[in-house]
Structure formats: C-alpha cells, structure tokens
Picture (cartoon, rainbow, N blue to C red):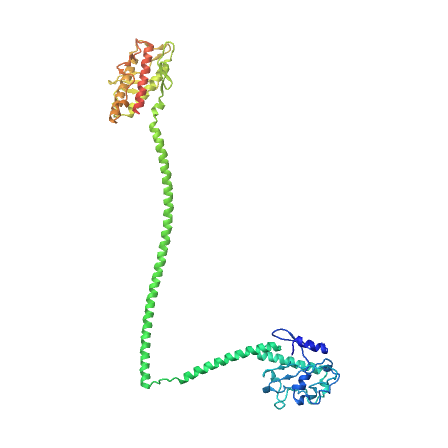
Length: 485
C-alpha cells in the first residue's frame, strides 16, 4: 500500500480503475491505493510464481489499468493456504508487459500479516515458497477477469479485518505509521524484558538464601510459645472487650446525662429569656413610674408653693373699702353698699379664719369659735355665748342699727380670734427658726376693739372710720394667711 502522493504518479502513467476499493490508514487517515506489482513480482517472488506467465496476459483489466495482482506475503511460520482458498496459479503472477508501456516498481508496498491473521492459509507447499492463490485447474485467462480481481481484493480486506481483531491495531496502515507502531512495540518489549530480568534476579537471590529448619522439639517449643502468646492475646482481647462494654455503658449513661443537661440548659435559657423579658418590662415600667414621680414631685413643689386659701379667698380693696372675693366689707356716705353684700363679706372672712384655725388644731387653742354659715356667720366667745356676725334686716331696713351691740361684740370677738391666731403663727416661726425680720408682724396692731387707731364698733361711730377698721382687719387677715401657709 502507498499513500496518495506515490499513487498519483502511477495514475498519471496509466488510469486507475474506479471500481477498485479505496483504503485509508487507520492512524493518520490518509488514503491508500493498490499499485502495480509487476516489477516486484519479477524481482522478488518465487520462480514458480512468475515463470511462463508474465508475458502471457494481454488486453485484460489488469493490463489496462496497469494494476498487477497484489500479493499477500506471509511469515515463514504460517505460509499455508486457507480452507476453501485455492493456491494461485503461476500464470497469474504477472501479466504481459507491453514494450512501449512504462512500468513501476512496488517500492515495498506489500502487506505482512501476523501469524493469527495468516491462519486462513494452510500449508500446501514446501518451505521457501510464496503464498499462491489461484487453483491449479483454472487457466491464466480466467484469473484476469474482473470477478477474480474483486475476489482477491475481498481476501485482502478479510486479511485486514483478521489482523485488526488479532493485533488490536486497526489495519491497514501506511509505512510511516507502521514504523511508529513498531518502535512503540519495541519499547514495550524492552520494558517487559527488563521486568523479566529483574524477576529472574530476585528469584535467584531467593533460591540462594538458606533457611533454618526447626527440629521437632524446637517446633513444639515455638508452638507452645505461640499458643501462650495466643492465650495472652485472647485474655487481653477479653479484657479489652470487658473494658469496651464498661466504657459503652458509661458512654450511654453519659449520653443520658448529656441529654438531661441539654434539656436543663434549654429550660434554663428559656427561663432566662423570660426573666430578661420580664426584667426589661419591669425596668421600662419602673422608668415610667420614676418619670411620673418626677413630674408629680414637680407638681407637688408647685402645689406647695401655691396657697390654696389665697386662691380661694382673694382679699383686695376698692378704694377705701376692703374686699374679699369681690364682696365689699364697709360703706361710705357716698357709696351705699347693700347690707346683704356686707353680710356675705363677713361670712367669707369668718370661713377663712375658721379654716386656718381648724388646719392647725390641736396645736392652736381654738378658744373663740367661728361658725361660718354663709351670710349668717356666728361667733361664740370663751363663755360660749353666741353672737351674730351679720346685720338683721327687715322690710324697712336694719333692726336697731344704732343700738345693736351684739353685732359689735361679734366683730370684737372676731378681732380677738384673729389676734390669737397671729400669735400662734409667730410662735411657729420661732419653732422653725425663722429669722425675726422674716417672722410674722401684723401691719395694723389689734388692741381690743381697735385696729390701728380705729374702732370696729358700728354703734356711735362714723361710717368712714368703721369702714377703715374693716379694711385694716382684712389686711391683717391676709398677712396671717400668707405667713401661716
């Protein structure tokens, strides 16, 4: 077989039959063609295969395509014919060559099959002869027909298939690929031979070594030692198994305890988280309460500084006439105040003095009782004699306006109660170590029925003086209210 480059020259010399099968190298995949073998057959084939028939073929298909029969040259160990494949006649070895027709040499384009592939041929000739395919009974002219050529190509293809199956190498191959494969196989053979030599050297060393053969007594002694060691090992194994069982039971107990501890830990963390949540809630609630307490304390301080009685009983004046809660206490010739308004003003003053006296009871000895009853207040002296702190009115005006001494005594006892409470407030300032300059001092001195320099009696007194005395009384009442609370 030749690559296409070599075959192209032959094609130019003479046309190639298109019915001839095309082969490819299974390694490099280059196309291979079947070329003429006339010079190869004349030079290299045996004499009995070429004598008498090289020039006897004329005008055949082989001659027309310059295609000689391709020979399958087997190795010397398997030069045999296959069953059912007749030997090739000598007349078919080479066709007749025209005088003016160019010829080509084979250039080594023949196939060498391995022993397994060549087994299809059985030995029918003697050693030294080539593989001959034509049967002896067939003449040379019949072998040059198209059917004979195609049967030869079929045999060649079958040889390639057998070679592929036996050598595990795809056939056919070109010469270059065959050389590479041959080099590779040579390298593998060298490696195998080196391994064989190494094994042989090892085997020789082993054969040269000497062995000490024990006697029966020594064998028995060694056997006893081995049995003792075996017993010790068995005892150690039993002990190890016992320890393993104990450790396994301990491990089980530890696993149970570990699970219990894990459950306890999980419960602990649940409780801890719950406690943390409650603690956070309590802290937030505590902070809220503390904030409320601070606000309440601020309000308390404001309330402590605030005089409720001063807000409830607003004492002021309207010119010369004093007022309490906008009720005028007194009258003038040119300012005629209704007696009902004056009685209401006295009722407010009595309620204020009574409230302060009750607040400091029992520290304050409430000897003179004030009975606030609205516009009809009363005063009880130390002898428990009641007096009306209001003016009796009829359809025609006040009753006994100039001779009503009960009203005068009620006003006098009111001044006496106010003076007693003022002295009590001064004593409280001394107990609380209030400096003298900040202690209570009445702006208008009370002496019996006089306030300042004016008497509080209405009988046989000028209205202007009586009104001034009432104004001074309200002023002293306001000072006592401010200092006592």
